[in-house]
Length: 532
Image (cartoon, rainbow, N blue to C red; front, side, top):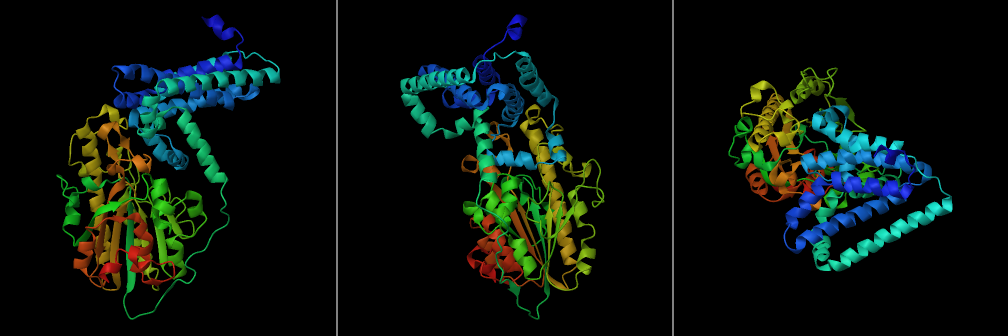
């Protein structure tokens, strides 16, 4: 057996062997979903077998095109290592590795990455990545003339394409529904879909027409009046789903303190994306979900730039990964470090962002003030780390980041306890605003960046492609509170809050709150406009 690994092999043989290994051992999630749609009975058995062969052929073609002579081993080893991790996350959390997920991974900090580490992940990495990579490294590759290499690759690709054509033609009835009615199935093909997504991400990131920084709202101004200055706290939550927010008739009262306040609760609020890397820059941009592009947004000013130009004092405090580029041109403070955050134990807490805010307010005697607080919130999968012991009301809780080891109740309990902590955080923010009510027209706006899946249909966390993402990842809580000097018709706000709203409104609502005059302001997208 070991002589096989010592005998020189052609590049095509090694490529086919790696492709076969990946199809058999790294596509558990793919075949699980295929079998859910096509149960193994009757003609489905042969069709599923044909899908496996087609996947093998597609993988062979992909790897054949990627690996050339001296680059073959490095390419195959890199694919094996990355694919092992993709297989783990797809098997454990049922996620798909699309362009947005790749962006998420590249923008995730060390602390967030550490939350995802597990012994099971290490096993995947060793068994599906390291060991086969060592074998590939040890196998001698036959050196043949360049022309023979090209001919060999062309032959392999031609045979693979022929097999694909025959199988699709033979099972045309099945493949018609497979491609037209069950498109999400292909998202789980490993490694072909993530390689396709990576290519698409690179193309969008480096091959775009955007340069410099496009200025918007250059005519922004605030008309001087005799009214009090504005003071607003905007809280950007993390991974909170609408149906677990106590104010939304959840069976558990996860928001007991907010319930005591005179808040406006938006019941049909949807997010711009299903991950922080998309939702946060999207909601602060002027483009809206339909017009949002990552690079276009990065090269265009956002609402904070417009407010800053109008004279609003802006402070962004972040206890999450970062602002995703939104706060690059305003005052930014990192609260994931104990240098700034005075409330840190095993991790730095959201409530630490509230300390010192009064001093900031006092240090700005002129102009309106906007304070943005970006929470760690319900960031998973280690929900149990997101709150302190005093908030562990719902028990037992899942005390691991390997959610598949916990019951649904344990996961839900830990998740709901984190919302209890956020409820206290928001209540404390309102208390701070009340203490400034005599001098300012105050207000608070809380909205989560996206929702979260808690195991429904085997799906966990977030980041699923928006078009097919479950409602749990898109339907988010949103709450407003106003101080006694803020002129607003509460009854009209309450009525409007029952209507469908989206994060597209944030850009214009912030402009409306601060009463900024600018040509980029669209009153129909301002949540406050209906009640002013």
